[in-house]
Length: 338
Ligand SMILES: [Fe+2]
Ligand SMILES: [Fe+2]
Image 1 (cartoon, rainbow, N blue to C red):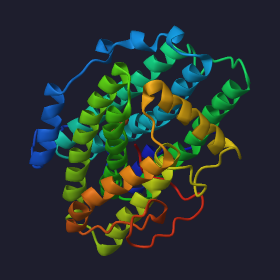
Image 2 (cartoon, rainbow, N blue to C red; image 1 turned 180 degrees about the horizontal axis):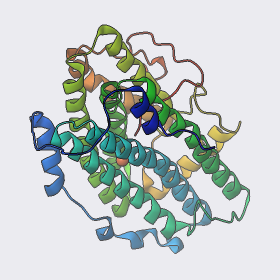
Image 3 (spheres, helix red, strand yellow; image 1 turned 180 degrees about the vertical axis):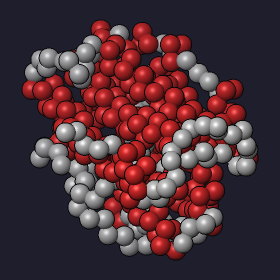
C-alpha cells in the first residue's frame, strides 16, 4: 500500500478541513503585495539570451562537462525550490492565507522553474542529454555524472523530510523558514553576475538575482508576518531551520556537510576540480574562500533585520558566523528549500 500522503494526515488530525475556496482578495501584508506586483514588471525571457556563446565548439570536452556539471548541480536546488514553494502555494491556498501571499508563492514557484530552465538550456547546448540520459566518454565525465546522480539521489531523502515536516510543524513555522535559503540564492547569483565572463551567463545571473532579491523581500515579509505570534520556542525553531538551511545548501555554497549529505568519498575532490574548470571557462563559479566570505557577508547584512523580529542567528563557525549554538542531529529532517 502506498504511504499515506501528508495532506491526508493533516486532514485526519486537525478539525479544520483544508479547502482552497472561497479564497479572498484581502491585502494585509503590503510588502508582500509590492513584491508580487514587481514580478510583473520584472518579467524576463531566457530565450533572449545569447545561447550561441555556449556552442560546444567554443570549448574543449572538459570545459563543456564542467559547465554542464555546475548547471546540473544548481538545478537540484532550483528543483527543491519548485517543489517547496509549489507545495507551500497549495497549502497557503488551503489555509486561506491572505491573497498576495498565495500569489507570491505561486510567482516564486514559476521563477524557480525559469531558473531550472536556464540550467536545462545550458546543459542541452553544452552537453546534450546531460545529466539524465548522458553517456560519459571518459573518467572525468563518469565522475561528473556520478556526482550529479549521487546528489539527485539524496533529493529523495530531502523531499520525504520536507513533506513529513508539514505533519509535525505548524505551517506558520514552515512558511517562516523559507527566507534563509533565499539569502543564499541571492548571494551566489549576485556575485556570479559579476564574476562570469560570458554574456549569456551574465544576463542569466542578472535576471536570476533580481528574482532572488524579490524572493528575499517576500520571504522576509512572510517571516515578519508569521513570527508576530511566535513563542520563544517557536522562534528557536526558526534559528534551527536556518542552520538546517546552511547544511542543505552546503554542496552549492560551501562544501557538503555530512550531517545530512551522504555522498561518495571523492565527491568533493571531483566537485572542486570541475568547478575550477568551469570558473576558467567564464561561468564565474566561486572558490571555497569566496563562497565562505560572500555567504557570511550576506547573513551579516540581514542579521539586524532578523534579530529585530526576535529570531536569533545560529552559530555557523564553518563560515565565521557567530550566534546561538544549535545542535542539528545527523539525518534530521531538513524543512527548508532554495
Ligand atoms: Fe532560484
Ligand atoms: Fe529563490
